[in-house]
Image 1 (tube, rainbow, N blue to C red):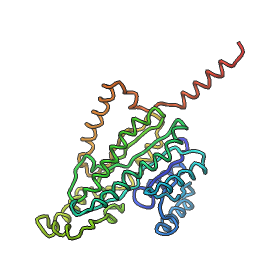
Image 2 (cartoon, rainbow, N blue to C red; image 1 turned 180 degrees about the vertical axis):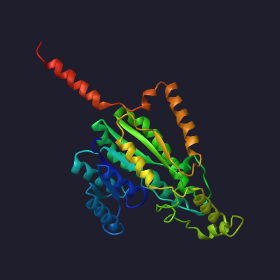
Image 3 (cartoon, helix red, strand yellow; image 1 turned 90 degrees about the vertical axis):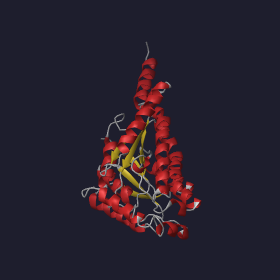
Image 4 (cartoon, one colour; image 1 turned 45 degrees about the horizontal axis):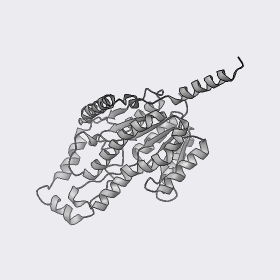
Length: 317
C-alpha cells in the first residue's frame, strides 16, 4: 500500500471526521477539511490534533469552507504546497433538513443544493487540474441510499440534493477515466445514530406553513417517519463501517476500485435499483462506442512505456 495524500471535506464531525481519522490510521496523509477552524469548529480542530498525537498518525486539519470559492482554492493550494500532490478527494460535506417540502423556501432549497452539490463542483475545479497533470487520482463521493432507495417523507430538500450529487458523480466518472482518475461512489443507508445528520438537521423557515401539515392530516407523520427509520436500523449498525469502506477503496490497487458500493444495514432497496441503473449506463456506453470510459486509463504505465521508448531511440545504434 502506498501512502496517499487525501482531502476529506466536511470533516468536523460525523462520517467526515471518522473517515479522516481512519485514513490517517491506515497510514495516509489525511487532510480534514473544516470550516471556521478558529472559532465555531476550533474544538473539532483540537480534537483532530489530539487524535493525531495520541495515535501518532498524520492527520492535518485545514480551513476549507466548501460554500466559498476562495476558501476551497486556498485550502487545496495549501495541500499541494505542503505535499506536492493530491491523490484522493473525498466529497463528504453535506447537510440534512427535515420537514414538509412546501414549508421550505426556495432559498432554503438552494442553500441545501449549494452545500451538497455545488460544493463538490468548487472542490473539483480547484483540485482536478492537479490530478489530471499527475495522470492519476481517485475521487470518492459519499452519496445516500435515499437517491434510489426508500424515501420516507419530510426529507425532500436533502433527498433532492443528494440525488443531484449522485448524478454528478456518475457523469464525472466517465469524464475523468481517460485522465487516469478513478471514481467510487459510497452509498450509506440511513444511519440514525452515531452521526450528527438527524440531530443537526435544518428545519423549514416557514413555520406557519409547516404547522398546517403538523397539525392537519399529516399530524404525527414526522415522529412516525423518524421512529420507523430508527426501527429499521439494526442494533449493531455502525457508521464507522462507512469510514472503513472508504479506507478499503483507497487501499485497493489502481483499476480494481469499485464504481459503487452500498453500506446500508437497513437494506432499503437502493442497492437493487442502483444495480439496474449502473448496468443500463454501462450498456449505453458500449452501444455508443465509449466502453473504454467505464475503466480508468493507467497513465503511469503509459508514461513509463513512453520513457522507455524515448530512451531506446536515443541509444546509439
